Image (cartoon, rainbow, N blue to C red; front, side):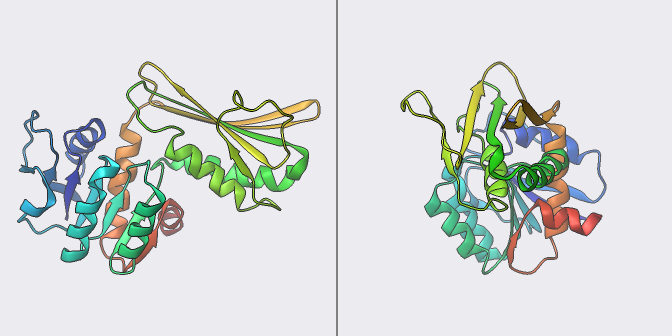
Length: 253
């Protein structure tokens, strides 16, 4: 049984994971951290990481980038593997994560969905085949309460596609401010925020007289919860280092 500390337990995804745990026998949440205390859980919830007394096997974080410092301090001090599902980290925070990964196992992914990671692999294959003959655009859609834009998933998709291109592309987020012809080295990334959209991502390869679109639609947040829990189980016995969904998939297939 893996004992989990749920960071951001009273947030939307924290509550989805809390519900998902009840359907499993290999994991349990033994405590949580959240600054909001308006939800009653069947485990203790602390306002910060300094108050935790329970023995924890792994941390799952679906909170806010501002919580990262306290989380990493706690995880490194107590040698607790950490699954970081929060997006919107700064370059400095990513550096802090990499430093922590020298001492503990850290699993980080902009999206915990198996389908999204398959989309990435197919998109990389397409980018290799099409080369510079096709323009690449990424469109992501999320609910109106999502704060960061573009989504961490959209950036993850762009970063992975970039690894197979002949030259480093420039990410373009706003075509309104610059009036010029599209450069072949660009990857356009557009964001839509509205309603209760769970998460949709499209990768568009636009060539001469043909367009190939690869898309993924998340219909329930439970798929992200399942991915996060599987990551926690995967990470629990791993040595220090950075891990991602690709590592998890290789261990299963």
